[in-house]
Image 1 (cartoon, rainbow, N blue to C red):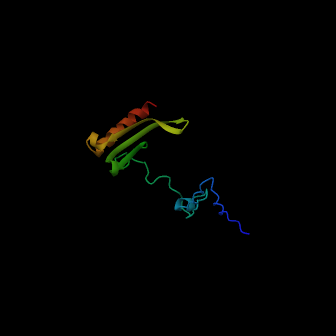
Image 2: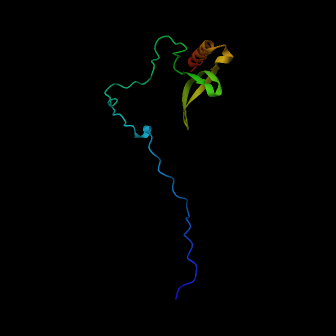
Image 3: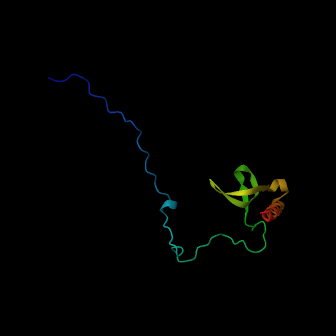
Length: 124
C-alpha cells in the first residue's frame, strides 16, 4: 500500500550562499620585483619627476600638490607640512589650499602656496 501523504518540502537554508570568488585583477596578479631592482634589470625610480632646481608651478616644492579636478571644478595647490604620528597613522599638523580663482590665477596661487610653506616650515 502506498503512502498518500505529500512529499516533504525542500530543506531551508539557514545562511545565504557565499559570494562568488573575485577574479584577480592585473594589480594582484602582477609579479613583484625582487629587492635587487625591477624584473627588467633597470633601477627603479622613486619619483616621476625630480624636485631639483628652482621651484616653479610645474615643479613645486616638496609638500605642495597640484589639484586639477574638473568634475568638481577644483583647481589649485594643496600644501601639507609638519607630519605627526596619530593612532590612525601619519597626519600633517598643518595644511592649506590655495585656489586659482581666489588668488587670481595659477601662478599667483602657486606663489601664495610657496610663501605659506616657507612661513610654516620655519616655525617647525
